[in-house]
Image (cartoon, rainbow over all chains, first blue to last red; front, side):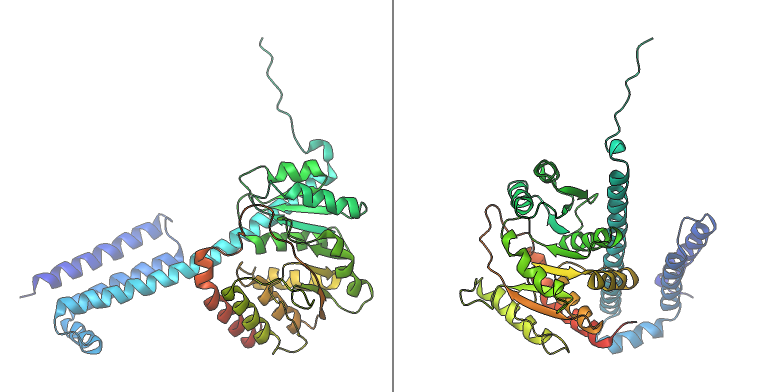
Length: 128
Length: 234
């Protein structure tokens, strides 16, 4: 008979994988995001379906209880995800800054080449 | 071309632009408005500068790199950067341009620490300056006393080389910009020289270069800049 936590873990893992596939099919997720969530779903399923793996992680982390292992491993996992996302945000910020830079220079060049178009005046509609 | 990056400097930018144009009416003065929330752009325009407005606040280093892009696109031979807060004296611009027009250097750094009457900051700031200048000076072709100085001048060769580096490898973030740029210049074989300058106290407000968060991150970013440079281009 399977333990309840195994059933819940495998169930949640299946939901994540199916939702991930659904989002990919609807093109609502990036390729990178798909792989990321697929790995999370698969990892969760593996850990839930194979309790000895949790014992092994517990031995590595030096925890005595299963719950401590799960909390500790989860904390480390989310910490690494946080660092990775922070790094991605930093890179994206620089890319956005590069676009902002090019946009402002293009606007400036445009203003210089067409000084009369620098400040377009909005025509008021005359009442009929 | 003289570039003046500015962020919320409505109180001083007009005066800086006017004094620069009064001394050098033939120079193009371009204020890079870094997404200011006050009337910085309007004050600069009223004073006679060209204004390039970034759509939102991107940081001082992005404003400087925008200046490079403008100088390169418009084919200016020399580019000088001064601060919008009135700390840099426009009458020192010829001193900055001297080594460039003599073909003695590609980049001039205005050093606040060569002259006998130096400007001294806080202990932390001084420590950071001495530490970073010493480490940077260990790289070939670099001998600088004030690697964090923001009063600089470049010739066209330097602008083109630095700009292509930033566009290919990515822009450099704020806090260690001058240090990273000095290292890039050394790697690219650009000749860098220093001239003594004197800076004035800020007329209004506080420096926006170093927030508390940036101060905390500074050693990490500095270390990463050195590691990245030692690793070399990817």
